[in-house]
Image (cartoon, rainbow, N blue to C red; front, side, top):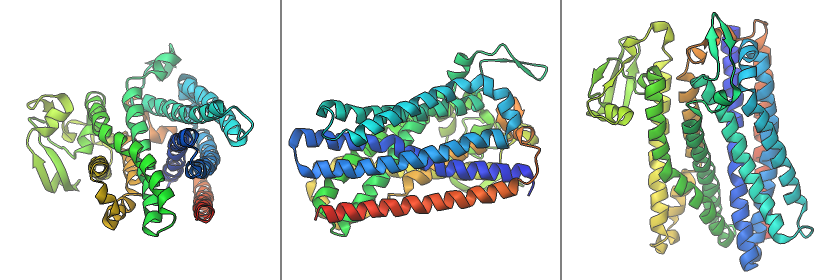
Length: 433
């Protein structure tokens, strides 16, 4: 493989790992503060033990998220120097603000970790809220920078030069809101269902079911609400992409021919050579309506675009189908949970807990698939319509050694985090027998 392929693999691999750590770090503080509030209201020691257990998880993922995120920031300069040369002055604002949010989160985490029995109870609890808010703010600011790559703004591009730079306009680019909303909800869905699934597993094993049922309810409540809201944000995102990046929309649906009243494909096998999709289910006129709010609207097909500006259609289409399919399943699971609050007998059935346990990894699979759609669907551009990815990569040789080194480091990090979390769950079960 050439430098470009190794650079893209390294960026994809490290981002794929970091996004999991970052999302858990964004969302788990909210579980923690809810459990903490319940402790303050009821003085039930169960909630105190749960709060401290989740606090340890928050600390672990804060550290791993910081390490993996720092590595990514170095990669931007190391792998994509031409991109950073031009983009750095334009999108420096969200990155600098993200750094500020990170420091606020770190300070609040210090107060929360070491403030037990030292700070006023309500102030101590409030520092936990600051951890969650600053973590979400960090995620939104980073997504804003990514939104700029999909909807570049805040500058004039004249004769290959970036001039008249407006960092505020670049920060508030046309894609930032829809991407940030979709990503934030996705983080809550993925983390909530993963945490709820882990507690469902402990319930099935009979490990302190009273504590784990309370933990499950707190986590799944966030996930169920986010899962029910996610289709609304997905609709906003799809309409935005249809306007700004019609080639990405066409790749998501593997739609080749321009036409009016275009059907929506469910499933299907993409034949890129013959430019067709086989074995799909068609919903008449649905794509036109979902993209433009009009059943007879015209949707541009992939054949309307130059061959050298098309993304890998099959990858984008399968990733999009995976994201939507899992999202739909989790939405139904969220609805099932709310119904089970009325039909409490369901929670006495082991199948109920098996169901939620099996859902545990699906949110993160959908999250990764969504990022594949966002990033691969933008190719061959690193800055949409302005700079190609191949023109931004470093000219230095030997990128394969960097890739293998990062591969080893991140696999080690993943095993370490897994071991630490298993240890925390074991300690929690032992302490609460």
